[in-house]
Image (cartoon, rainbow, N blue to C red):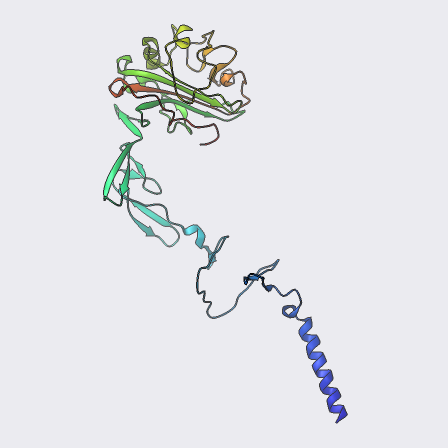
Amino acid sequence: MRSIITRAAIFIVTAVLLLLSFDLARADWPIVRYTNGTVGVTSDYEVHIQTNRTQVNGQLNVTGDLFAKNINVTALKPPTCMRPGGNGLFFDGNSWICECAEDYFGTSCDCPLNGVTRFYNTTTSTSQEKTSYTIINGKALHQDSDGWILLLAYNHNNGENNALVSKTAPISPFQGYSHIWLEDFGLTANDVDGVKFFCNTSAHARVVHFSMNNDWIKNAIVTGSTSGNAVSYWTSGTTKFSDHTGILPDASENVQSTTFFEFPFSKSGTWALSEQSSRWECDDVSFNAADTLHQIWFRQALFASSTTPSSDSTATVGAL
């Protein structure tokens, strides 16, 4: 009898030791329950669940990527596909596709070919328009809500010295890298109400933002030539926008060059965007040691109004 009890005790002790030596029975068991009732699974390695059916009652929150059959489900978020640009969403087995209506293009079908951006009001079931582009003699040009049309935009990065791109309308005030003049799309000085200049730089916090409407500037932007330039054109008769904090143009003492690219007005600081001299400056002399953004706009005479200048077409360098 004693032998049987001894063997049973040995068996029990052995079984307990085996259980304790198994990973799932260690004291650092990966399934934990916190004092607030939350149950968690912690592991420095992969966690595998093998079952015929996994059921979640309630909300499943995945902060990382979720894969199903080696497909990243979280990457399958469909594009925004709203009327009037988008006709409907389709899935080709790998990704979502927005079918575009006529005269629209883009991943979300939100880019109009005719230059008019439309927002569909689901409450009134109507299409509301906001002009972001205008077509002049077949040329598409960026236009802001105040009627200013973009002629020149150079978003320049510190140290870069890429060639300027002529006869090409900038695609964006903040991402563009090109310029165009009125003669390139058939306008003359008589079509101009005013001309606007904007620049900022990562070298300092000042912003140059003003407009002018004398006869000289109206003729100058027809060809881009600054022939006949004079200091007085910059030191008087300009209108400052609400965000203007620059020293220039009021403090201008010199005019140089024959283009708008290299010192059309300057003092101790300059306006410069020139790959020839590697000068990219806004109201300073930093040569090519800063990010810069330069813009030149014009407004057609037919769009002229007496509204107070706003600054909604500007942005800080790097916030593009």
